[in-house]
Amino acid sequence: MPPRPRPPGATMAAAPPSPALQPEQQRAADIIRLLTLYRPLLDAYVIDFFAEGLWAQLPPPWQAALATAAPPQLAGLLGGHGGGPGATWPLSLLAFAAAARALAFPRGRPGGSPRPPCHSARLHPLLRRHVKPKKQHEIRRLGKLLQRLSQATGCDRVVDVGAGQGHLSRFLAFGLGLSVTAVEGDGRLAGTAERFDHELLRELGKMGVSRNEGPPQRHQNPPNRRRRLSPLTPRGPCHVAGRLDPAAPWGEFLLPPDPPGPGPTAKNPLGGAGGCGGGQRVLVTGLHACGDLSPALLRHFARSPAVAAVASVACCYMKLSTPPQPPGCPVGYPLSAWVAGLPGHELSYRAREAACHALDEYVGRLRGESGCLRAHCYRAVLETLIRAADPGKKHPGVQTVKKAHALSFPQYARLGLPRVGLDPAAIPLESEAVGAMLEQQHKVVAFFSLTQLLAPLVETLILLDRLLYLREQGFQCALVPLFDPRFSPRNLVLVAARAPLGAVLSGLDGDSSEDGDSSEDGDTDMGGPEPPREGQTPPAPSAGHEPQ
Image: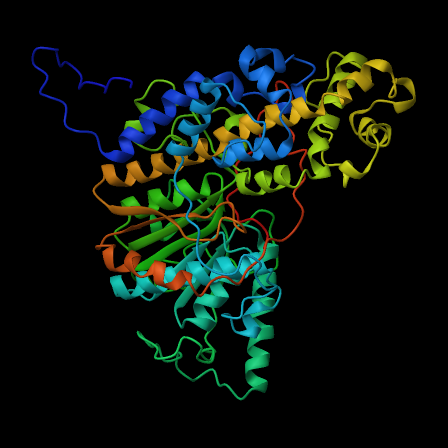
């Protein structure tokens, strides 16, 4: 383990005995040690598999074992269930896989049906409109957590930062009776959220529900879990279009939206008489707050007594800002003094991008030997052809070719090459060399599987860094696997409060039995996001929310 940094001026003789490390500190240090050992694997782009000879960089015993491994055997290696009949792994590979699984933060397995229905039966039908099943699962679970935080802190005002189209805000306000300010960096999304609110209010009006009615009655211990859904309150959220300024005081933290849209704007929506929040204590949340938005929420909580608690679910780690940054510009990683003081804590763009992958989903594709697995090989072969045709092009932005796995390689290449300014007719797409690379698809899949083992470690390190940042300032906080990881890969929520969290977290397990009611939405492109182009700055962090 790297040595702990000593205070300036301290000597070996004068230094007091080091206190015992917190489990989180030890875990962060151990993760960094493991990532440092396998840095070349962590930072490798699978599209460089042939162009840079990545297979030859693996230890020879690993090459021999992986070269003959079938996808279901790789699934067993990733999932910790062995490799199935005929699988024999080198001890060093087994140790690597076991260490990676042991150090990654546990994601839980909430109860419920393994084949959930299309929509959440626990949400009012009016709150399901425009909301995909995965998001229904998330807003209900996070909403219940925020309701518990509200009860524990005595604070019923919530600020939903990066609110997107307002699905979470709508559930908190209409469904749970909380006072909600929804802040969104894209003015167009804020305008859409208001339109959805008006639709819901019109439906409530048809049902005879008046705006003057109070919030629904809350039952701490309902006698029957199969009771009817609670009625909706007609008080909707207050929407504000603006981007977060992490350096501004809490009451003045908004910048104009980008791009401007039809949604409402306000310079100071949370502090002062004119704001939606009225300057009172608030709970702050961000559901899949992108890039630097999540650490900005934590900074505002840490320095703003008006923020009673925060519940943050992160995403898009590759958009985090890292050192060096211009003076006065805070970084998104690392936040804590502990992680920043550990040698080797740095995370490349590629490592942070890998942390956004869904390991459980990839294991499922391996187990089912999905045809989607060939997309990585196609892109790696294409990268080799691109560099041969134009050595100045490295990691060009081919972007996603839809249903690439259903195409032959020549069909795929004829779609991809024009996107980087190359003529497919001038490049041999069915040569013997291309055929030899395509026959190595199983090696490409095996190599990518190893990188997937490290992805949860990177996410764990980033989230531990945030938790340690809050602990260093004396706050109670916890990382909770709130969503079902089968449907929501980014399922870890960081909860912090200025009050004890025991009562808030103790009842969450009891709620999970009610939540087997969501499903994953959308297709995942197995080719993965394109790496940044050579010499190009990674995409700028977004202060908004993933579109819902």
